[in-house]
Image 1: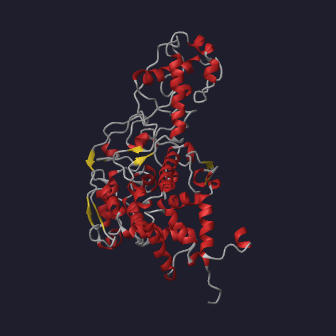
Image 2: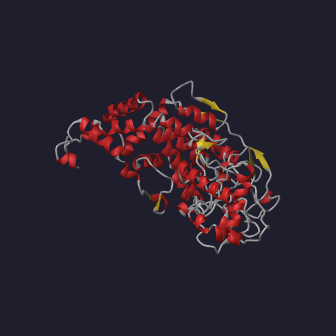
Image 3: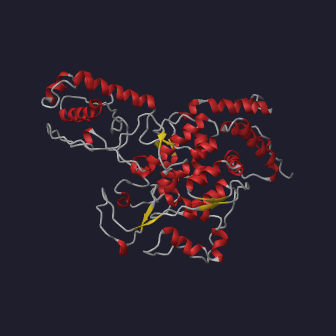
Length: 477
């Protein structure tokens, strides 16, 4: 505004100067409020411009995961409190997706393909690698100092003698000598790791921030907490009566590679956001790909159609969807969605990778689970993940696909997909849909992306310095 008032915002170069200044101003990055998570502050070390992260949030739509109701017992007690933002499983998944987007945006190279194909994810990682390493250094210092003391048999005396030292360890927060059991829990935990040449993870409620353990949604084992909440072992000090549990020792240095995942379309947050309460939604997922990535258009469901999947205890969800959408009247629209969405049957409605599908029907129940650590048991059927890609305009890319990974890999190489994302970026930054008169602006933005090696910031600079942004028609013209 000052530049405009002072006459320093007249030429295209003036606009570019201001745009780059704003993109480089890190004062925008601090203390962000996340509107989709009940006004909670970010806890994910976001260091990219919030408007850039917001574009990709709105484009991929993964924040909707916080609004999709799920039945916790079907998750084995993992999925908790949907809709409560950062205090619940879906909110955690959204924040972890933000970390992926932030990392790709910060690297700013081949951004669209990286978002679609990366196999590196963040799990239980609400602090940067340096902060996690600092905690481990503190823990090792505590272990080295106390490992040869009588911490098992005389924890009260050991705690009193070393209290001042322990109070200086912020990651442990032992404030006084009234909690010897807490010291014992920590030392048993350290002994199980450092004592065997291993490295403990930093998922402690007061050191890391997570108490909801959604690792199984990534097909990883659960990760318990330790210490005062007693998730790792008894919260009451019982001398030698401490039984360590096995758990997933996740990497401190993140992101890290996870099997059976490829980009944001296989992230649990996106899969949950594009699902129903009890099933994956091949139609919704396919429609998203058609409209967002392939710049297509699918008509809304006619008011005369009852779009319901039939209930059948003997058939998979895919078979039931196909049974009602293959008719001539339905297939006119569903041919543009089903072949794109059905490969994602490789993931259930919680985002868990699977090769078989339980036939969840009351008539099929084999054994009742407790809803916390065990599931209801049903017969299963193999998951079919075949599909077909069409609409890229490239004969080398269009065709049958075996699974979602082959589909995503082809989409990431498509010119049409790249141009479609840029079209949505135009709408986001201009605040309106494109018109024929904006064709030069879209072409220039696409060229800026290609010539810069896939830098999204150059797309923004191109859009905001374009005639489409800088000029308006006068009324009556």
